[in-house]
Amino acid sequence: MNLLLLTDGRFPAGGHAHSGGIEAAVMAGRVTGVDTLAVFLAGRLTTAGRVAAALAAAAASGAHDLVELDAEAAARIPSPALRAASRTLGRQLLRTARSVLDAADLPDDLHHPVAMGVVCAATSGLGPADAARWAAYDAISGPASAAVRLLGLDPFRAWGVVAALMPEADAIAAGAAAGAARPLTHLPSCSAPLLDIGAEHHAASEVRLFAS
Amino acid sequence: MKARARVVAAGDGAGGTRLTTLRSEAPLVLRDTPGGLYLVGGAGGPLGGDDLAIEIEVGAGARLTIRTAAASIVLPGRPGDGPSNLHVDARVAAGGELRWLPGPVVAVQGCVHHVEMVVALEEGAALMWREEVVLGRHGEPPGSVRSRATVDVGGRPLLRHELALGPGHPGAASPAVTAGARAVGSVLLAGPEWATGAGSTVVGDRAVVLPLAGPGWQVLALADDAPALRRQLIAGIEAAARHTAGRAAP
Image (cartoon, rainbow over all chains, first blue to last red; front, side):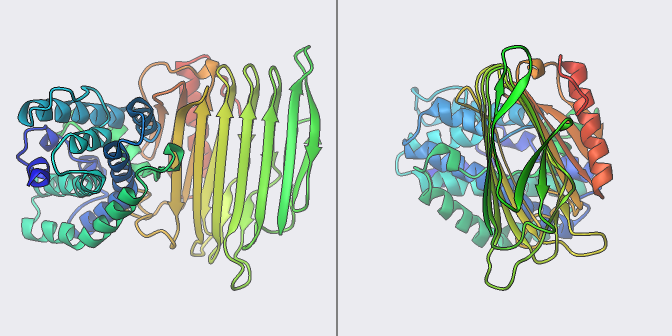
């Protein structure tokens, strides 16, 4: 049950304020409807989602120094706007978890996927595989929900796209969990140039609904 | 074809640089010219099945620039030859400078190319590292390229950057990744003179210059062809130079 609690969109960790890059993609005309949303999410899952799942699983495994792991996360996010968003989401998650889960000894400042892993490690019954599934799911569910709001999409069709990606998300999470204890430089670092480029345009834009 | 090349550049103590080791094997031929060191590829290639490795060492006070004479046209081998592999391993000592400025890698239809770049900078070392990938020759569908850069400064991670492009990598043409852009490139600027300055700069619709968490910048750009990509990367380097003490001219 604890994984359901953490991944619930209503869990008060601030994720709803971020669009996972979909707002920038909509503003640039790269995502215009369900079909382009589907390929956006597939690309996001195999890049940013894969990296987040690997970092979350590594953090939950307890096999790594958290400061070093957090530095590995930062080196995988060249965009300062995305680093700031990842930091904010990580801090908010840790603060929420400290209070909700009564886990006073959690650190307070980590990148979001590393924070996910740390929270899983501190939560009864959860481990690296759960952290990886959470991070992979979060990589597509957040932007899908934001796309419904931004483009007025049919929610059934938008979430159909997410559902169709579940086997791929499962495979990515399984790979992340299996490699959780590998040396840190071997963690994946798949980049999605347009997420970085879009995030900087988005940060410079004056009219926006989401923080990132 | 398996080939190994190695170059060692040492400072001569008077502001100059000597190449103390320069070893090549066809098709990886290193040629010393007044304009810098050139990597002269054999005719065509890398080719499927090739296993190429370059080792670069830049000592304290030495400056080394490596270019290629032309674009690298990556071709598929015969069936069963497998992917082509290029491994570049570079170390730069404090006070040394490496500029790795090869031409674009053109991924021809059917090729499967893997590039692994590992760069270790001592604290106080400088780096300009360019990477340009063009997906297919003009009017042709592309092959597949995966490249991975692992760059450390003083033993700490500066950049981990992996690109997987072409038909072998589903999702690569996604609007989250390249949106089908045919030319993808980046330049990493690291070292004391590129110590992070003010915030990021939007250079163009598909080009930005990003201050990293560590001491450096990444210029990141997408374009429709190699010349447009090069223009965006140069504009990005110039933008980063305006924020820092870095020298723009590549």
